[in-house]
Length: 346
Image 1 (spheres, rainbow, N blue to C red):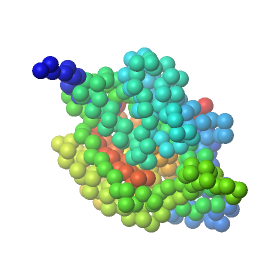
Image 2 (image 1 turned 45 degrees about the vertical axis):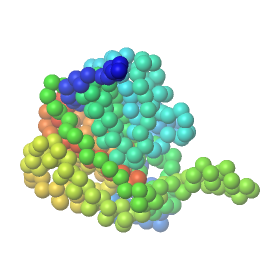
Image 3 (image 1 turned 90 degrees about the horizontal axis):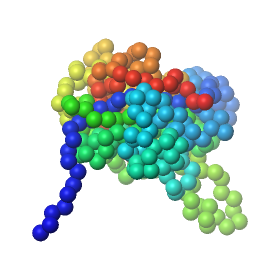
């Protein structure tokens, strides 16, 4: 019998460079307080957020993705034509098809031979993409992969909603993965619990519009069950973070940097306290003045830590994405040496 040929495993992968693009508008708590019937103090106490970054109306989610991707390519010193796959993690692309990844890949100058597809795993999407890109490179399916997390969540914000509208921000973060002689990305620990699918969602589906008849249907906006999400995150994240550390063959005390999804500061602090990391571990708190950017939050937080010198290339970072689905994904990675751009959108 004739046997099929397949790809040949080609070693390991690493993150070569990171880039980011935050929305250009700085939105304060005071600007959001009146429609919420709230105050700056209430928002800070509940979330730890002081300001959040949002994009103006004429800057679209694909623009943020493109700018972040270009910055990551610059940092990695990889030509767009050498990218074998583009993975875009997002929940805010506004059309079912085509996906955003092929659009962004073309705008960046990637070859038509590069695979491009979207991942919708909520706030865990970027870490899902890292797991897939790592597997592509290790199995010989790709040599260089661009992974982007990008969101324009302000398009789905109801200014009167007191569950999620005041935490969300806009931005894009990206990394380029390439080959490595030694492991620099640990195994991905991931999963989902669809029994809590309604905990983070939007108010309407496409079918609501199709069968609305004469009744007007409002634009879909994001909602969450805050207490349920908090309980889930503070129980799930420590458990599976420990699994990711063990899977990588390291110990909690070996972790130099912790980059959790920037959900809100209360969740970040609660989760960190349960992990048993070193007292001097660097903890990403980009949420304080960027807000919750969903799938973009982990790469944006990584970009900022490296750009501002709080973390440095070669350190071991535990990154963990968790959110809508409810989905989660974590891996231990070696941080890259290079950061592209200045973290701002144009």
